[in-house]
Amino acid sequence: MNELLSGCSRILWGSGLVLALLGTGMYSLLRDRCAPFRSLRLLIQRPHRNGTRTLSPFQACMTSLAAAMGTGNIVGVATAITLGGAGAVFWMWVAALLGMGLIYAENVLSCRYRSGGLTGAAAYLRYGLHSPLLSAAFAVCCTAASFGMGNMTQSHAIAQTLRDAFRMPPLITGLITAAVTAAVILGGARRIGRFASAAVPFVSAVYLLLCGIVIWQFRSRLGDAFGSIFQGAFGIRAAAGGISGEALRRAMTVGVRRGVFSNEAGLGSSGLLHGEADGEEPAFFGACGMLEVFADTFVCCTATALVLLMTGVSGADGAGLVLLAFRAGIGTAADWLLPPVIALFALCTLVGWAYCGSSAWKSLTGKRWVTAYRLVFCAAACLGAVMQLQTVWTLADIANACMVYCNLPGLLLLQHGEHLKSGKAPFPQDGKEAVP
Picture 1: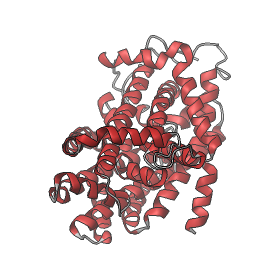
Picture 2: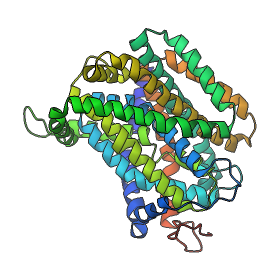
Picture 3: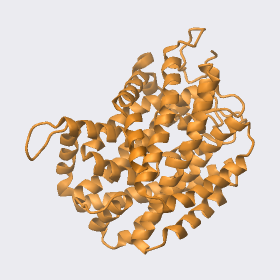
Picture 4: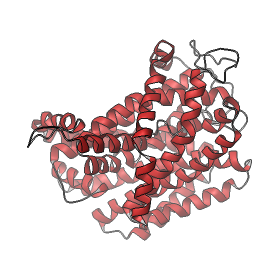
C-alpha cells in the first residue's frame, strides 16, 4: 500500500508540477510592474472594516499563519533534509520567494470574488473562471487535505514527540489532541480566531528563541551549514567533486514539495481564511499573505534547518531527529521544552486547517453538516497519532498536489485576464477592489 501511494505522489509531484508552480509564482511576482512588492506598503496602513465578516484582519492573518506554521516548519524540514539532503533547504527558499507571488494572487482574487459564504479558490474558480466543476473539485481536495496535512501529520508529530520525550502512548496523545481540538473548533470561527491570535505569536517566539540558543552554541559551524545547503542545491558533491543530476533533481523536488507543505503557497488555502477577513482592500490581504510566507519559510524553516545541519545529528527521522538536534544544543532541557512547543505548533495548524476544511465543506454542502465535519476532523486527529509516518506524509503530499492542480488554472487565467471582459487588471494598484 505504501509503495502504491508513494508512486502516486511521485507522479503527481513530477517535474511538470514543480516547474508550473515556480513559473506561476514568478509570473505573479513580476506582472503589473511587480504589484505584489509595491503592495507591501499597505501593511503600515489600517485596513478599512465594514463589520460584515467574522474575523478581524489580525485574526485572519494569525489563523492563516497558524495553518502554515505547524510541523511543516519543524518535522517537514527534517524530512526534507533526510530525503533531499541539505540542498532541499535552498529549494524551499526558492519555493517561498516565488510562493509570495502565488499567495498574493490567491488572497487578492479571493477577496475580489468572495460572495456570501464562498471564499478562497472555490470562489474565484466559480465566479471568476466561471467553472463550478473546478470549484467543486477544489473544495473536495481541500476537504481531503484538511485531514492530511492539516490534521493527521500534525497529530502524528505530537504523538512521536511525546513518545520519544515522555514515553506517552500514541493513543493517549491522540485522544487528548482530539479533545483539545474539539474544545476550540466546536466554538466556531470566533473562538478559532481568538485562539490563533494568542497562540501563534507566543509559540513562534519561544521556538525561535530555542533555535537561537542552539545556533549560538554551534556558531562556528554556521558557514559549513550554508555551504552544504548551496552545494547540495545544485547536486555538487563536496567529497568526490562533480555534479550529480539525480541529487539535483531530488533536492529540487523534495525542497519545493516540502516548501509548499510548509507555506501552503499555491494550494489556495490562504485565500479561504483571508476571504473571511473584515476588510475591503484585497491588496492588503495579498501583502499579509506575502509576509506570512516570509515568516514561515525564511525565518522559521531556516532556523530549523540550521539547527539540524549545525548539530549534525542522525539516527532518527521526523520529530525525533529535531529532538536529537536540540538535545545536542541545550541538553536534557530539550526533552521538557521542545515537546510542548511542537505540540502547540501542531495544535495551531489543526485549528487553522479545521477552519479551511469547514469553509471548503460549506461550499460543497451549503453550510450543512458543518458540526459533523468538525467531529470527524477531531476523530481523524486521534487516528493520525497511531498511523505510520510514511503513510501520513504521503497522503498529505497527494492531497496537496490535487489542490494545486485545481488552483493553478484559475491563478494563471485570471491573472492573465482571459476572463476579465472589462480589461481591468485583477490586482488593484491602489489597494481598492476593482469591479470586473
